[in-house]
Image 1: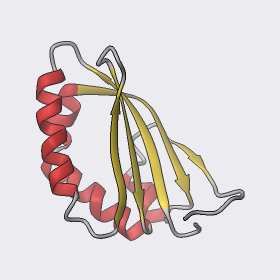
Image 2 (image 1 turned 30 degrees about the vertical axis):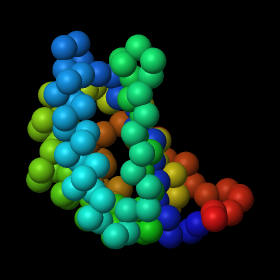
Image 3 (image 1 turned 60 degrees about the horizontal axis):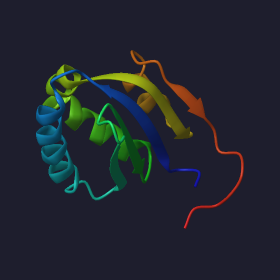
Image 4 (image 1 turned 90 degrees about the horizontal axis):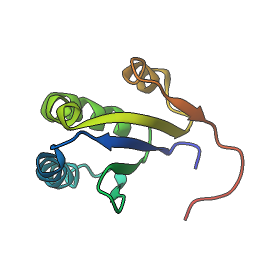
Length: 118
């Protein structure tokens, strides 16, 4: 549990952008499936198609950095054209380098406190 880094990001879909965002989601899911240390990459949408949650879990901070750098290179511009982030919660103890990648975002960090992963 100590090395894992995970997050949930909540997004508001911009009006008229759902179809474009769905296409982008499919592209991102396919691309991310090639990242061996991305342990979870799950997208959820509300019944009114207005809110999306993405749950991501990485084996460690280095895997998270690899993913974020790939996201920035391939998808960030189109992603932000489709959605507005409303909440971003990071779980675990990401490295300083990992935190620096997220520094421009409003992020709440929650450190491990108890429990166990399977």
